[in-house]
Each structure stands twice: as structure tokens, then as C-alpha cells.
Length: 62
Image (cartoon, rainbow, N blue to C red; front, side):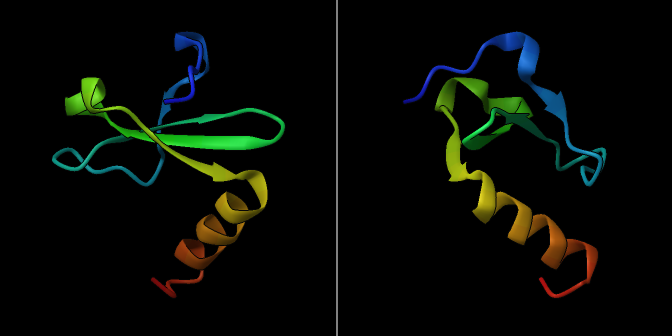
């Protein structure tokens, strides 16, 4: 698991009250974790992959 400093995590603006995820971005990677289950670790994406995913969400493609 890649270690991400706690001060980089923030709740995603796309989260709802029952489905919260946190996101942390660094120059080369973005990480996502479940707010309620932080101890389960995080998923890592390249910055390019994360931008493509966010764009797809904005365009309601996913």
C-alpha cells in the first residue's frame, strides 16, 4: 500500500451522505479510499487515469 499523508485526503465532492469516498492527489498518482473503512487501504490510479474517470463522471458516462 502506498503511504499518503493524512493532510492530503479530502472528501470527494461527488460523495453522498451514505457513500463517502476520500481522494488524495499527488503529482503522479491519485488515491481513493472509503471514508468508513480507511483501514482497508486505498486504490491508486495514475493522474491520467483519475482525470479520465472524473471527466467520465462529469459527463454522466459512468
